[in-house]
Image (tube, rainbow, N blue to C red; front, side, top):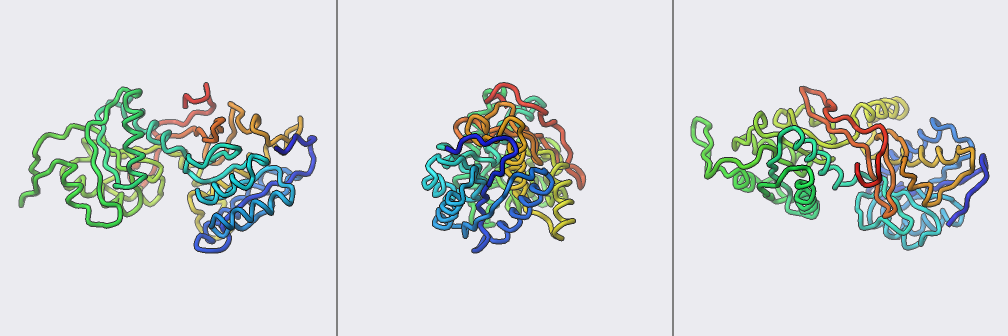
Amino acid sequence: MAGKLPAGAQVKVAILLPLSGDRAALGRAMQRAAEMAVLEQGARNLQLVTFDTRGTAEGATAAAEQAMQQDAKLILGPVFAAEVSAVRARVGGKVNVIAFSNDAAVAGNGVYLLSFSLKQQVDNVIGYAARNGRKRIGIIAPANDYGNQVTTLAKEVAGKNGAEVTRTGTYKPDTMEVTDDIKAFAGATGVDRKGRVGRSAPLDFDAVLIADGGTKLRMVASLLAYYDVDPDKVRYLGTGRWDDRALRRELSLRGGWYAAPDPAQFERFATKYKGAHGDEPPRIATLAYDAVALAATIAKQPDGIDYGSQRLTDPSGFAGVDGIFRFTPDGLSERGLAVVEIGRDELKVVGEPPKSFGVPGTN
C-alpha cells in the first residue's frame, strides 16, 4: 500500500474510464466531470492521469497496470463491475481503488464503491413512508436480479421501520407486454365500459414500491393507475432509478417519493457542465467529479497526503456534489440521501438529507 507523502508533495492519481468502445460517450463525459473537479478544487499538487479501459475487463487490467507503472497513489474508477473485479485482481490491495460500480460483490480488498447503495435507497424511502403513515407496502418489480434484490431488501428493512411488505409481484423485464402482470398484482378482474375496476379483493397496501425507471416505469405506473391503484390514495415509491428529471412530467408519478441526493445540487452541477461542454451530463458524471474532489481534498491536507484505508474510511466522511458520503471498511459507501417528491413539473425535497454522519452504519 502506498505510504503517506509530505504535505504539498506532487501526487499522481489515476482515473480509469471507457474512452473507446460502446460506452465511450459515457467515459468522455465522466472524464470532463473529473477535469472540472481538478480545476475547481485547486489542488495544484494533484496530477490526474486518465487511462482507457475500453469498457472491458481486459482493458481495465491493462489500464490498472499502466497506472501502477506510473506510480499512481490512488485509482479512481472503473465504471462496470467486470472491470472493477479485474482491477481488484490486478492491484491486489497495493493501491486503493475508488470505483463507480454499484455491484457490492466487487467491493473490498482495497476497492471502495462510490456508487449509491441499493439497500440504503430502499431503507430510506420505506422508512420515510412508514414515518408518514404508509406502513403497508406493495412491491412490483421486474423479474430479474435487480427486481429480486429490491424485493428482498424491502422485506429486510420494512420491519425495522415499523412497516410490512403485504404484497409482491413481478413483470417481464424484456418486453412491453406487461398488462396481465400488473393486472394480477393489482388484483383486478377487469374494467367495465364506465371505467370501473372489478377487484377480487381489496387492496392490502397503502404504498407501492415500483423497482424500475425510464419507459418501463412510466408504463407500470400508468397501468397501476388504470387498474385503480390510485396514486391519490396509494403512495408510489421508487429507487434511485427514479432520479431522472424527465419523470417530473409524468402524471401517474406525481406525488411519488424516492430516495436520492438533493436534485438542486445536480441541477447546479449540470448547468456548469453544460455551460462548459454544451450538452447535458449523464447522471453518474457526478461520481467522477466527487471522486476527484475527494482525492484533491486529501492532497491539500496540511499534515500530509494519505490515501490509505484509515483515511478513506474516516467516519466523518466527505462532501460532494451528491451530498455527504463515507466508506465503510467492507468497501461500500453510505450516503446522506434526501427523499424527493415528484411535483407538478418539479422535484422537491420532502425528507432533508443529513448534514453530517452519526455512528457508522446508522444512516
